[in-house]
Image (cartoon, rainbow over all chains, first blue to last red):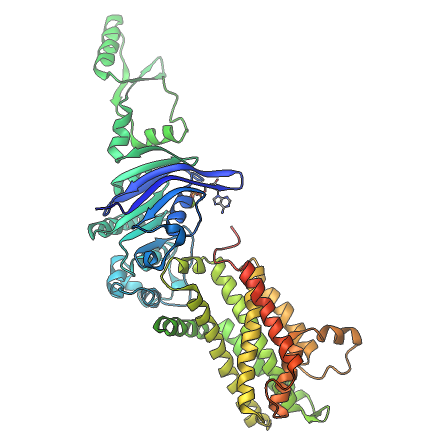
Length: 286
Length: 248
Ligand SMILES: Nc1ncnc2c1ncn2[C@@H]1O[C@H](COP(=O)(O)OP(=O)(O)OP(=O)(O)O)[C@@H](O)[C@H]1O
Ligand SMILES: [Mg+2]
């Protein structure tokens, strides 16, 4: 099957700011793809080019076989969008808002089913203005799903959520994935990418600095850290040959007759890899 | 077609639920008519005061409903990101704008009926001599002031600014154009301003169809000026209107 999204050498500048410096990636049908990166990395720019909001300066992009630059109606029928910032009409109820949007599509989902999927059944007849921030975000998601899209764009879907609401949102996204929907989501949160995404691209200053499954990203570095304390100072040894390094270290310590306090051997977490990739040193490394 | 009706239904539903808008746009002109009708004597320039004021408040109503209402609605929705969100749906933008326009027309048609009922039953005002011309004036007023409202929405940047701008424009305009009573005693400078305002000419046209039984096009110069103002607003909108938030 052809991929849902194909992006090749995508470029975008705002005046002198080069927001995207030629990025390429593919998203397969049914896949959850995470764009991970710090503020200003170019996540929203990428997503909004693919949604048809912004014009690209260079490269090619194909979304469900269409050029998003022309934003054809046939494409808008098949995608769902959650923007980073938008407020639906405060005066309509949750159900009315879903019905309003359902009316724009040729084969919408059942409105009550969607409301149940995003967990707003109890708030069905409440006016939008009475919803909490997290509930409004769920409404955004429901409205994005009501047209029965094959592909959904979620720009920071859980920013501002409390931990329980985030977990609920993750479950919603997993439920969506199990229905076969392709999802492109952006996030600042590593654990979110790790939890949800089949594949992740790490974006930094408009460039993809790493791409792969979450475990590949960690595995990639192949480095193991050995930590211990010596005279009250913490020591970190990074090595690609942990067996040998540890053996040498312990032998030397035994010979000298002193203890390796707080001895610890561990693989870097995704967090360490991520911070390294986006250029913020996790800790002083030996 | 079905989606146009669908959108129009929701536009009307939203409008009547918004108390502030419904009061400011729908009730206020009626209230002013009742107030001014009780203040003025029997005649203004030899014409029954209740008739002159009814025409005046009809024009004021067209300006608040179409110019004010449309500008406020569009700017608030744009800044909330709601217009941007719509662009990602299959709803064609022209259909959306047409639905918003038809909703404005519906509101103003209802307001006109309410004004005629209030004038006729409460103050003994006469009814339009040319009904067809009067109906045409309802459409003309909405079209022209909606053009201006659309243009204003394209220039005003913030949701906070829009209601201030709208009020600062509409009230003096209505006052100078004679919506609230005769302007014959106004100083020449103020009358010179009134001479370029669209509401002045719109009121001339409505006086013609309402009191004189003239056709809508009896005064081609006035008609041309009213249409030109609407088109000017539309031209600004075509060049400057955006669907994405201006602030941020
Ligand atoms: N409309 C715009 N005009 C000018 N510069 C812009 C515009 N949109 C984005 N930029 C700039 O382009 C760069 C990328 O922005 P973008 O919004 O794509 O980042 P992001 O990864 O979504 O960030 P965040 O995590 O903060 O949402 C930033 O330097 C930003 O300042
Ligand atoms: Mg962003």
